Image (tube, rainbow, N blue to C red; front, side, top):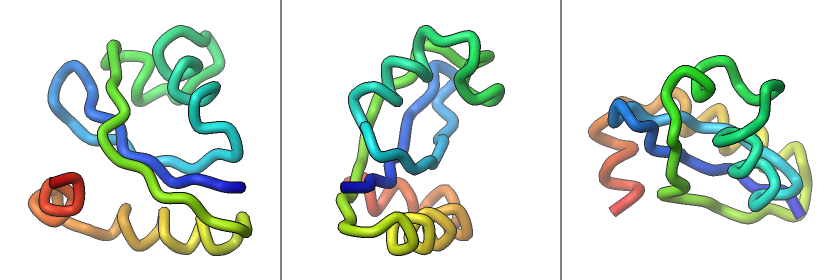
Length: 79
């Protein structure tokens, strides 16, 4: 399985990413030295949204779609 996810950072910005291990990736964003540069400077981060996909290509397509959204659209998606 593959996932897309949205994190809310400590500074209230949103970060969108994809992974094949959601729990491990969220932990990495909060603790790892090799995590995303963007979230490393904005810890702690909190998982606020995710979707599951059967293929990596579908997950990456959806990640791209979400990254094209305005912040307000992402907030509506999160609920």
